[in-house]
Length: 441
View (cartoon, rainbow, N blue to C red):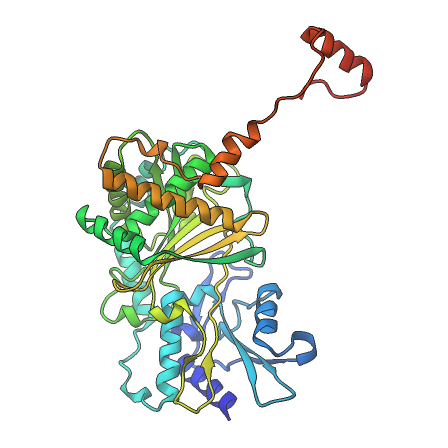
């Protein structure tokens, strides 16, 4: 049946890609060891319909609220959970992969390979790149870099962590974040591409600059740090674009939001991103260790991910992964993050508008953060079009309604008070009426 064909397709991908047969031995070891086994049996767990439900909404709720756990010391680091509908032949299957062996591109490869197997042309697929060869090339490349010198210089201006809204926990499991998807209009998207061509840089640079404006405004800091996601495939060798594994990496990007005009600001962000590229496989923990941030405080609590995606992911529903009539379709892709504030920019190609996917800690109003980002996009675009000397630290990120609320409504503090007494007499009267109240904090 359709379920068995799906299991066979996943097992085929596990056999095909060595990284999916990986386990990481780390307990009671000074250094973790990656082991690739020749055969790894796919774990399949059946969930009761009465504890999950069997509708798309019920499964989505289960995924959002369940506590997922994958033991790194047990291969494969991919699992199936199945919810069968007792009243029909339909089943929902949750394919879980550990982030240490997968990234956004790997998920696309997984679906493509499953589709090829299901449709009967698996033999036409090119030979799968070996993940261990990628690791060997990466280690060789890193050996020629002055990692310590580079990151000490980059992080020298950072005197304190960039933690907007006081969110310190960057080790969460993603269960406390809410998801928002904000489509940008076709006209705004076209204007971004046009101006970036004019300034000989990429839309990725523009969106990194936008996020820096938001963080600077929300923290009051001139120099901000945040994570930027690299594909890890820039210098990975032939066929690496179809490799599965944890190739992506997050590195700290430092941006100074100061008196520079928009053009100079954009050029600076572009150069900083270019400077980071040779170091795309340096571990984040090592990079952060060269900052002056003491103790257990994180360097940053937000990440931006500029990613090229297939257009269908904008509406990720009913995407066929098997021949017509085979009864298997991909309903949705859900990614979790340990950071409380994440923005992904989805680039679906020249003919499609951009969209923003935000994951925001439930302690915050995600729509407010999205509004800040959209307003910053508009402000930076306008500044680039004007080409004047307006300092980027003066650009507005507040929507008009929020701006009015903060400037006018929150400052409407006038109150009636006795006009026949001096200020010190009012203090004396307050102390007499409330002798146990705290006077000064």
